[in-house]
Image (cartoon, rainbow, N blue to C red; front, side, top):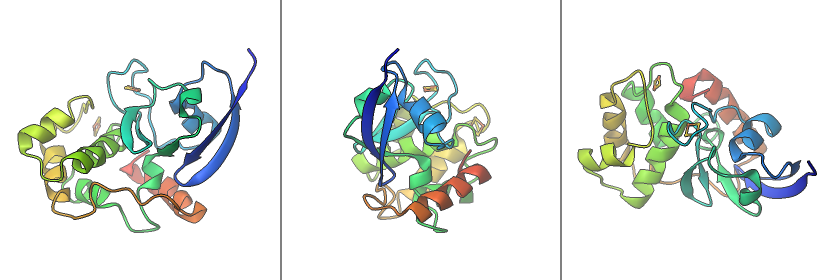
Length: 183
Ligand code: FES
Ligand code: FES
């Protein structure tokens, strides 16, 4: 199958990649750009492990073709921290034990940031509703909800540090992802 060029910005870094038209965005991120913090749990739009931000909105990247991201800004879990400084949502998940195995965590955090971007002071019910497309098999969700409630006290918890993330910052984000926040 002939390939087509896709130009996109990921975590503030410009990329131009030739892809098959059928390639999914999650596979572009993981297999072509090495951003393995974004996980594949189901490939059928059910689990939310693959959630990233596309032009500032949380999307399940197993549901988006790579070609649909042409000209777009993508943010992955590797783009949230600024150097050694965790994003407030990552910090809250860490402090409140909002993760166990960590498989759901990148998608859960990306969804939670989007939730606070649209609703900075959600009720517990609104948090549970907002995260219902992201599945966790370990935590029972209570500590995840608590983490989002605590993150909501931080003025920047609904924001991402872009554009302009440096390559060094993204590399630091890869290391954090390997430590569970989360690869
Ligand atoms: Fe995309 Fe499960 S891998 S929703
Ligand atoms: Fe294991 Fe959520 S922490 S699936």
